[in-house]
Length: 162
Image (cartoon, rainbow, N blue to C red):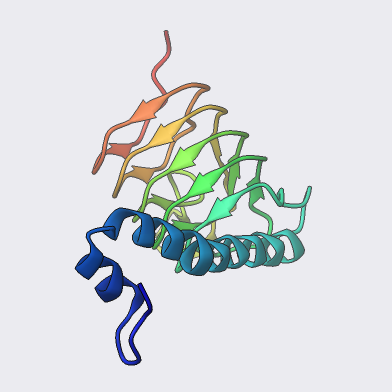
């Protein structure tokens, strides 16, 4: 069936009853290469801007995720969702972080003197172990051990000892 001028691929295939093959072909040929290229460019950007041992090119960091300090460490095959704010953190390999997650620099970001005045920022670090899952909208303040799961919307303040 010839594609009429002014109709899209989806409209032509829908008329002939072959919607599935057309959508699959359009997704592979048009959408997927752009998404792969954008993810690769974003990983390359973070590889160049994060300082310490470079961020792996095998990471997936989605849009609007913000690293506050360039000394954050991101391991290989780490996946970070969109709209995350990551301060000083060490994220070990194969960890998955959902969207809207906040990882501050430890439990205490500001210190006070005896009179109650702010002294300045406290430069702590939050460590997230390997093979972890951090749920949507979680706030991670304490260290997370290997293979840990954190529920969505939770705030992790203390590391539980076994």
